[in-house]
Image 1 (tube, rainbow, N blue to C red):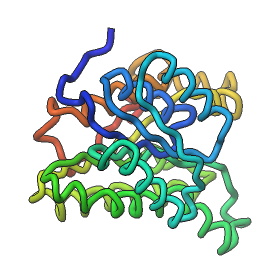
Image 2: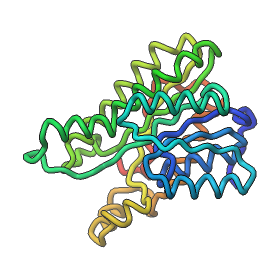
Image 3: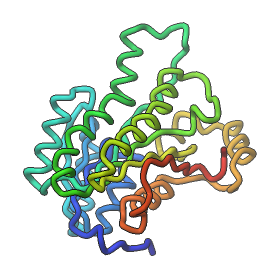
Image 4: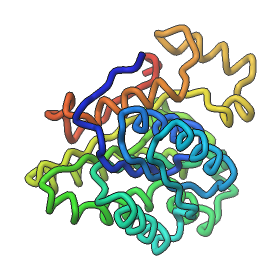
Length: 252
């Protein structure tokens, strides 16, 4: 049975990319804490299925069909969340896409698109929720990075550039807003075997590398990240801010 954090009950949580994979596990994790959860995703079908599943269990969950590259739409989803559930207490900047790309083939347009998908929305989602957090003198923002840049993974330079930048963004926001009791941290997942990862990348050779590199000799699931995310958002982690936490089974 997962731990329950009494301080999280009725908190308003906003998760980007919450319709599938790690994001869906995070939505389920906060819903199980009694939070009021809103999530943003571009994929309608799995998102609506998740809302139906959790609503049937008695949880308060809302879905906003939004392309996070559209900052106006992102701001609208934050405003809609506040109107429906109340001001956001906890922001989880999870959304990203690790699409592979050859450096020689990257155009300026593709580069800008990857920045928009993997980094830009994290800043503007934080910007949108911070004023109400300042008024409340409390708040939590958790930005998602990746171990890809730490292990020197190739084949997706724009993605790894974005994920390294998440750490700088996190530390700047933590410094600027710590006086308001707003905690800002980053989580860097390792190779988490979501359905997408299994479908696209899990070959026998890749599995051998996983078993060689990780200290823990098991596959990591989205729930492994979700449990830590919920803990980090709770008052059990009240003294933790300005940090970068790795959840990778000991790969690094």
